[in-house]
View 1: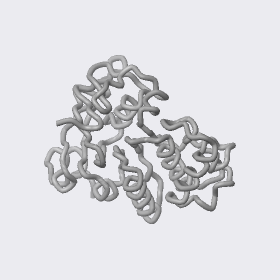
View 2 (view 1 turned 120 degrees about the horizontal axis):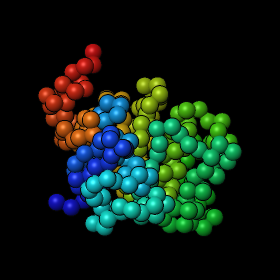
View 3 (view 1 turned 45 degrees about the vertical axis):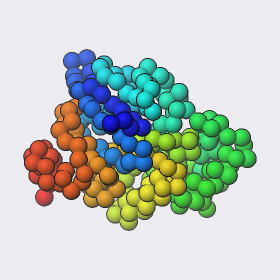
View 4 (view 1 turned 30 degrees about the vertical axis):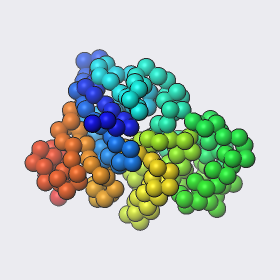
Length: 242
């Protein structure tokens, strides 16, 4: 089986600490794969390895069949991998529109100014920030900054979108809005999505499959309905919730 993203025997050590060990994952085009695990399970390390912010201690990462191990984050971005971070990182002194235009100008397509502005307007409408284009990004609420972060990642021309806790800290209503935003962006931009999320109801709703990490190792990979009754998962995570 081949996929847009293929991760095999992936490992990462930090000194004597094993953050990830022997992780395998194949993600098909158009799929949404949720990443589940407690703090320290290796979820963000996995994203950092795929995006090139870290290099693996072992294993391989392939995008469209070609290795991306050793490439810098900007080169991986230009191959079609967009990433958000747990803490939103807007260019606070630029406007909301300028944040997205910058991503469009320097992403995979390197759009000219007019096309980048049109693309930014389109994406900001989808994420619910169409009326705030002239506002400074640093003045947005947490929800607004997270939606801007998603729009900016998509504006790079991403085919594979890595979403790292984009619903953390949001109200239930804002979580529902973010789910709608991600699903609309996916459909209109032919995206493949990897999403880390601690909001379980959201992860179960949006994911085609869920990868569960525990102490850096894969313990389950299945459709949400099967993950919800997997005894290993229940023992490690779900069973501890009231």
